[in-house]
Image 1 (tube, rainbow, N blue to C red):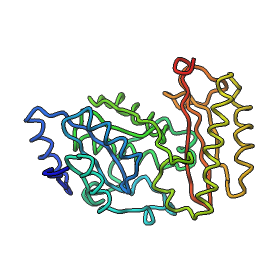
Image 2: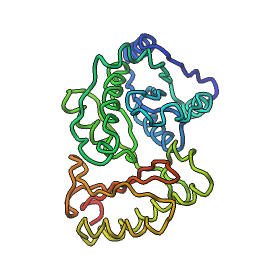
Image 3: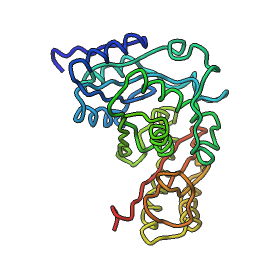
Image 4: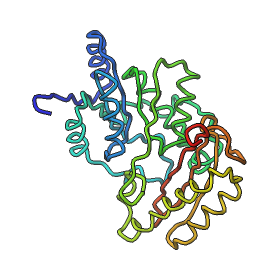
Length: 288
């Protein structure tokens, strides 16, 4: 964007001063929280934010508190130069890129406790959502956005953040945006870069299972039968190690036996020891 000056904010004080100045001008603020290594999925959030609000802030912060020991915090892909170029191209007004010691004076001193985490990602990664909720809560206080944008690929995270906003009385509208996929159906993810060419081809089995599930769920297939059909698809790929398939209520994230109301069918699998998640959303009204 010619003549456009994007700000790089590395401290909390810088971010607060920047946002205060915008709000004094009557600007509305959008926040797109990310861990960086931005791809087309993030771009879709930024573009949606750009349409709704006067100013757009993208946070780029690989949050250490949502990674358990032995997870991929150190290996998580980072490319701040590419992230900055994409944000500038899309008209982002500021990137908030703090270091961990700026965000966490003492990591053990405080946390936001989450409630919708007894299954799926919460069971697989027990500390994950505590870290997610804590850092998002801090970002909300620092940036004070009017609207915040999250991807629907992380369905359980989206439901938890919506619940946190309601329970902690944040005056912030949460917008969930649809999954962005590669041409072969694989959901966009920074972790896709971990896959070898063979693993990348194998990972498409998740989308095949998703398509199978979509084709069966309209008939009101019971969850157990739906799981069996999707598991059979995954079993056709030797490199796929399925962790779970779960049909849940879109708001409560509680597992349900049949399709009723708004539901999400979530799944997680490992391909070459790379952990990938995917899902599809289903509404009786939208698909009637």
